[in-house]
Length: 180
Image (tube, rainbow, N blue to C red; front, top):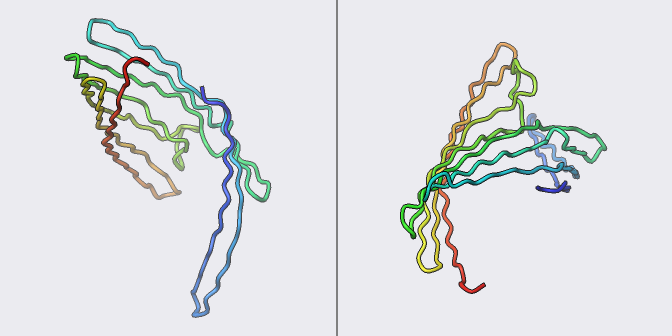
């Protein structure tokens, strides 16, 4: 569970415009407050057969109830809620090597412009593969993730086809002290 969180943001905007040969410069200051609601995950890990671990997780993100307050006092609810499912497999090939595969839903907090179904957020699936190597308390984990987010924005008679491919390589190293 993640408790409600308040995020304060103060910023300055400098704008310089020159369209007629006479530069115009303006500076504005603003402050925003964003309040995020309770959110969390529920998970389950099972060992269906020796050396094979199956992990399932359901994530609840009620961002529709998040509140953004601008410096002029305007309150808005800019995001959509979503719930996503995660699944992972780990095969312990040897005492020092674990192989992993996973997939998870990735739902954005926005609705593409002009979608036929209201409150239908853009989303994709993230696929991952990785391994963990351990030796006398030292552990190295590495993983590869790939996702492809595709959605359309419809602006009157214009249609924008958006496609964002993401590739991540992640690694961490840790040491476990025995006797603690």
